[in-house]
Length: 292
Image (tube, rainbow, N blue to C red):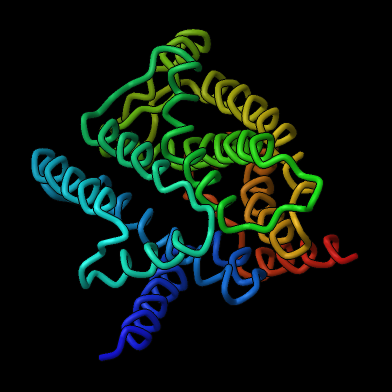
């Protein structure tokens, strides 16, 4: 197989992973130019692999060993061996200013998950969110095109902030699912403020009084909203397609957050998501709004 054939196969594999597993992000990714879309699929596929190790069913010691292995493999880039996902990432990073060091932060966040780290304060939780989601924002920014007048350092800070907003939304959406596997992300200081323990009741749901739990969810949702308002200032710094991509991805999660504010207890009844038609609408609207 020629080098070009191997590279094409590598990017196809990343596109396949993204198509199957990026149920929300894929609506934005497809708005990019083909070369940038392929690069972002490579970033996503590597991030997905790291997440899957942390969220899998293997014993904790095995997960930690595998996270060490993938960290070492990332440090060896551009030598990617024959691993198609790493081959694609190495090529993308050779062409674009993708800050691969941010993947170390993602691995660090997954290590914290495996160890069952809990957070006392919002500052500690935001630090975790920077690792697992702000890092993805900064990696993605390396794929995007900035407008000529944009400051890349400012854009990176805003991408980091927007990643925090998305992760806080994820934490609220998955509050019951995470608790079922022993993970609590909300800061202890906030749980104490609202008198919640996030203990599992006999019915498999959260045992906290509904009014106190609803108040907790609304409080956290308002905090996430502040991060959206700050992070969305990234959009004017990006070119048309990059801005549309970010607007679509963030728009889907932002709508989820609005539903949580309107009905906080919905997070205890089901895993909240938008129907496919609404995700497509958000993406189409993002592209239309970004048109010159």
